Length: 143
Length: 143
Image (cartoon, rainbow over all chains, first blue to last red; front, side, top):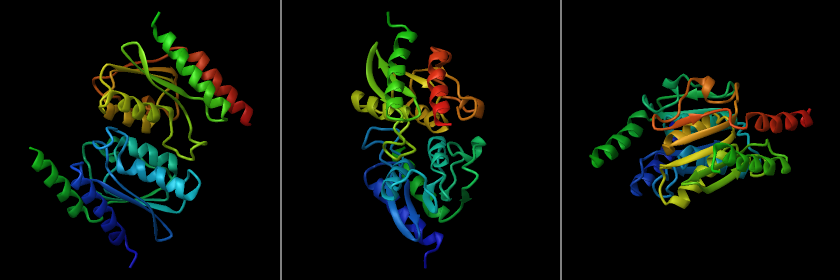
């Protein structure tokens, strides 16, 4: 039951919550021992804050829950490949796994030749189509 | 009077405030029209949060003050070269100038071949010795 697809669906629900606030629809959750310990979505417009990406909020939230700043034995599910800022944050957090929906060829960390922490396993392409379709529809509606 | 050295001294005061909390001593301020609109220091231990770097806090704070997420006509002074996370955040903020005290050869963005926004002017080496001495003393005391 607790597959990567299962948890990515929860991240997608967060992305939909962002969309409903007219935010770029990116959602994220952090899971520890099959338990969701943080969930968030992009709030950069609502909060007037470029740092309010879904990942940054979830990292802060999960660390608060765990009572420690390192996200050992945690998996972050995010519907869009993290940007440079979020890649840096995930590195500091030494998170165990990062599972990515859609790739972000332009602003994602992978094409910038950045990598996550050596301890971090990265998986891409989980519910990729659903994740990118949400984004495509959003940007189309803005044109 | 309002030189880069003048403002970097205020950032150094913030770094000292971090030191007094046993935090890695990095301080930061953001200036708009010669007015300090944000000041902060590293709080990663105090807040148990890897994202609580001085720059991230000041970006959030300055955007709150300005009522907009882009830090146009703003200068950020920071005593240590920003890391990948903070480089990414400064990029999103499209800040006009970044003035750096000490270089961070290992974790700073410059040696990662990352750059700030094309609109951003970068100045390094302002009160470099004072900034790095604070850090050296801190890490020496930890050994």
